Image (cartoon, rainbow, N blue to C red):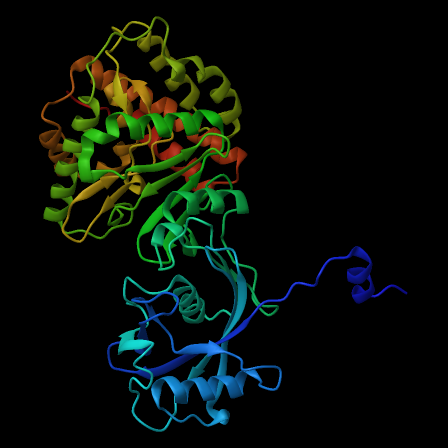
Length: 474
């Protein structure tokens, strides 16, 4: 049998050896937040001028890591620690920018005797209690990595710096990788490794992933919270067309909305993924608003819709460009088992009418302007999200899915058009009725095929409303 030792001898390679460090997390809990003791290195030492935990090396093979910690604490800070009060916190395998690696054992201590003081002024010129969540900017990156891993409850972490990295912590060059423990649950709702890597290249290390997708199999959206602050949303599109539409929207008309739309941080065409900034608010869908709050929201919604439509000059519609009409036969055939008697005849009569209407001008449109894609902040401001169905088309395309929102509330419809700045023309009102019916049929088809009874019911409700005479008026 060949042992690892004999293999090393036969290969002629020297076994890898590296130093061992011990790091003292002297912790006290305050009303504001936990605090830890840091010292500022000084003199002819590595990382002079930077903040670090009290720490040191083992004296030799005779000294274990707990004994070394107790000794270093006494020598550097003057405090006396009972070995029974030492708690294992986290182990960090670290490589410095110079290329040398080492292993650090970080220990938590909450009970000690004596008041911490500068006991070695030749290598330390300051000592301070600092909040665990607000470390000084000029903290040694190795120390910061250990404390971040400790705060996250990790037991093992890797922190391998690159040759050009600074000795002190830089958020843009955060090399911490937390290794999950054997008892850790699989992280729920996280994107795959390629998407996580793409995101962290764009915004830095992500501490928390939260699934933020809709309750549909094809909705892949996550809220990503940065390890050093900041929140972003990461979305993976279900096809290339949706990805291209959303990226184009962010780079063109969404800019006209200012703070009322997220900003594109990074796209990846191969992954069909985007990272965008977070905007405040909760979906307007399901929000409980007073009558005046509702009218204010719809006035602001109308103003946002007008900004989208005016973000580029209107142009003539391309010849024969009416995708909803072109798909009508296919959608009707698929939805037929779920339609009410007379629905198909009603829709076909609208299609005949569509052929006689003048072609509308095309503008930029959101394509899925409905209440769930509108966020209302605490101050009442609105923001628009989700641009994967954005493309040029008639302006009324963006009013189709708002019809249900003001059923029985003519004041909301009036508020919307007050914000929009004009009423619909007679031709636009007719086209809105036609497009609303075609969208309802498409929704019924999709809902039936994907087990979404709510979508089917919404389509039926829209057709019933339109057949009852609930047409738009100019």
